[in-house]
Length: 173
Image (cartoon, rainbow, N blue to C red; front, side, top):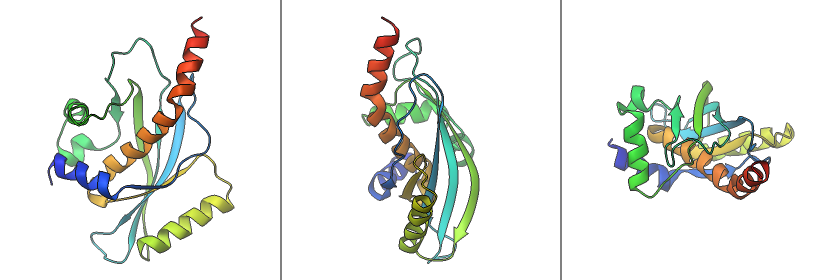
């Protein structure tokens, strides 16, 4: 599947079930844990569960504009495209990430024996029981999971942007 098709599929199929409640930190690295649920391609009726986290580094006024750094998303290994191609691909579609470093680490890949709806309920209930306000819950496609994680992180960055700008201006007064 080509990048354009993968992006379209991710935009169409990614659903953010639950954002983290606490905002991103302006002056520190923010660790953003997530659980990504995807229908299994290998075992129809089951759900692939990816648990990981993205470290979003603090904003910097010294980095070049629209030049984010994506680490650990598997673009080179799984999709055979380099980071510059991904940045250009997103920018040409009007998607710009702030010049931050986004480092993704997958902690576990597991299979939930049940359909995606049951997996969503199970994991949403678990996050609520654990009173986890930092983790997000995402539904996406297994073929383009990287873009689903980027869509999730992009939403968090957008939600934090006004607070970050205010904090940056206050610090540099």
